[in-house]
Length: 236
Image (tube, rainbow, N blue to C red):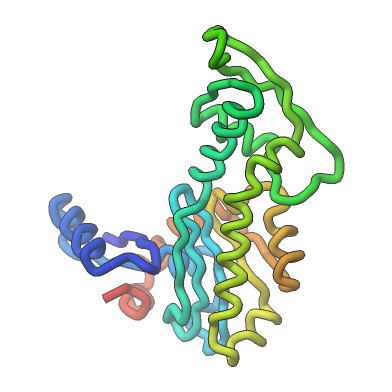
């Protein structure tokens, strides 16, 4: 069994994950950093001596890693990702419109009109929920700029985490990342213009993985097909 874990997971948390897998009757358990699995799934040359930077934005965490020679040179996790974006949208509707919406509606709003940087043309959306004061169903119309403002804080945290990573990586790998750019994976990376925002903030090329939603799973599958690679990248 291969289990993806955040790069900064503690030894206690690693043990808990292994124990859970053992209770599920797994005969052999390998813990792999999620950004490593995402990089493999995205087809990055992780065994090269050059540096590869990947930002995996999932539901609960954003995992950032710089990978070289099949090892994580720098790894960091921030607990701000897709779920935090959804919560920010829920809070926006509460404060701005006294409208209570659910997580599923918030996610749909994020997918339909959410963005990290201004769009080429404005778009609007009708959102239904329950009015907090009157207690009856209500509908409000919002535009992409409203939701962009609502997402400002979580997006800012993710952008800053990427900037921090670029400041802390070994200098000899900086040139590699400048040439190769930053790769995005995970469902959260599908937020409109997030790649553009990161490009503007870092001055680096930013590329999306071919299939961001399944990069980690594809990477795990490739490791199962190549056990020598799995043993090189599996966490202790």
